[in-house]
Length: 219
Length: 219
Image (cartoon, rainbow over all chains, first blue to last red; front, side, top):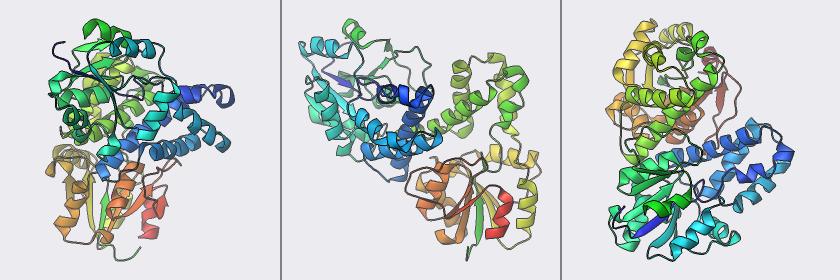
């Protein structure tokens, strides 16, 4: 991969484990915790897309709560769990290799940033609670008031850094976000930790890694 | 419900059972048929929203095939089944009460139409293969090149009939589509056949029925 000037990471699901909030409550929730967590995540993402199409933007934190409310009803989870789950969602755990990889990249001459659906305060808290303060910038969709994969989101770092789309390596574990960034013109790299199936959305990533560490081999 | 001039139906999931294609193959697919069918449907809808946001429209039939391809891989379904499933998707079964309800409505003085993500030819085939030729119009998103819940879709019948949004009764079993039509300004009626949980997308339907027949009681 040549002429890369900026390495830009998606946050939720890519750097931070979106299932870690429900997982930390698995003793209370029981064996359905994983289906519940997946449903919550799917609903949350669907709400971002639907609100973007309806032009009814609401910030990611409110959508996280709205989708949790529905998911808890669907899975019959005790309403008392709500505040605990939301608090845990603010301090999601990073994947094991994230910190070391970011520190190694930091020594090289790239812009390092996050580009995420999250609000600025959510992202700042995720980064600081996990001691990951290596980023040049943390870009939030709140700047443009619409969610990924609208191109206005992917425009944010390109405009800020005044670079070409092709000078960006964009990493996401979310197949639809890899498609969005790739269709936009980024070198989109798919972080495929669980050997899942890719999407049919006009983009096929040239590079796929099963772990962020392997980024160091291809960059 | 007063001053209704047009009764407009969503098609997939509302008039026609989207699970009926996979259900007709359940002996070959085995007990996973229902999870597979739900995954196919979810993926199909997600692709409509994602393509709309990425401004990469593809017609609903191609998206149905793209989402089937992914779903068959995820559920490890024999690739030989693909053409059979697609053929069955062209002749989805209507829900049991649909035909009688439409015939009763036809005797009254409403415009009756379909407003659907499907292509004109898919919708015409669904209607004719099920002997449901009662509609004044079959409106397809292909006219505007973007999917629900973009407001351009809900605009189609309003412009064609030159009526107010509030003069439309819009029926959908898809909670996000009820939200979309309701936020747009329709009297959106939720057809909740399976007692599921509604969405948190700024709209709460005043009317919910568990069966299309009950439309006759509220219209």
